[in-house]
Length: 330
Image (cartoon, rainbow, N blue to C red):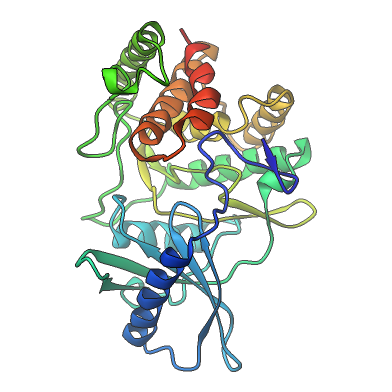
């Protein structure tokens, strides 16, 4: 479970090692992006793969930068940067800083060797350690304060027209995806009985997600406040990264995503209580009851299990950790 003393969730979303071929392909894209941005004098100090590939760029004359390479489905760049800019202007929450104030200057599109467009986005490099390396009650109290501060701001923010946030109104909420766990091809990893149980949990979660999608108190949400998207920069100080999953919905959705991560840990209840106390220091607690949270965190796990079955080369380690989190909600 731990990796270099850092907790890695079941989906293995921690930093991954790039193969030599992956690094070579990413290097070509980075060079094209540097040319598109007109960044003379910058070189690549490191390449890491998280949900996307990120290059750390350094220069003798300029500040270190983070260049994100993204080809997967997500919100459009304008939605991400408009929300990020609003949070930077309107809250005390420390967040990642875009390269420029104008979002048009933060993104470029380059094409990889297979003709697939890759969105490149520039940010100032954010130093620190992932929250996954220091899962303390103190940090989770601060994390609850951070989430509530974002929600309080969002409840009053008037979004400009034309933004396109994600909507989590069903378990498989990304466009073009569906639950595949009952497919016999996955029987090696999930028994027929467990697959049917997961499908039943997802169906109940879908009903709850559909209800929440119609609630009047929906707001803009970060959409992925989790321990690998938060840096600890000094004791008691957190910085929030990764605004690419901006969502529109009930605040409980943000909380469910946060609570999914670390759910298998023995200290998870303590961390959640600290988070709730931090949240309540800013605004009222929006969670209806424990059953609601069980369903929403199970829905998150089901979506990630689905993704693992479709994409992971080694499915067993991921399945063995994710499946119990879903079955526990049955």
